[in-house]
Length: 109
Image (cartoon, rainbow, N blue to C red):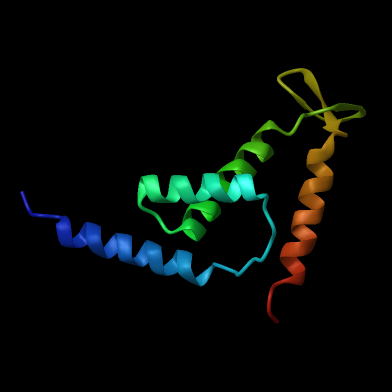
């Protein structure tokens, strides 16, 4: 069986390179209490604080998207297996529209 360590390393390096090109600098304020928590966790897990904050923020944003509530409107948008599917009038459609608009406005021509 061939050794795949080099292939695995190359994949990790490529992933890291792709992630690095997608990073943007952010500057925001946090409470002193949260700063201490971040510094303690960064030290505990031996990570740079900015990497930890980026990972925490990414995780929380994914979970917020997952937990955004669906609110059924009055308009049927399709029928699946005989059941009506109503438009979502909750925050998700507005969020997606804003996200799409911001994504388009940050693309280079």
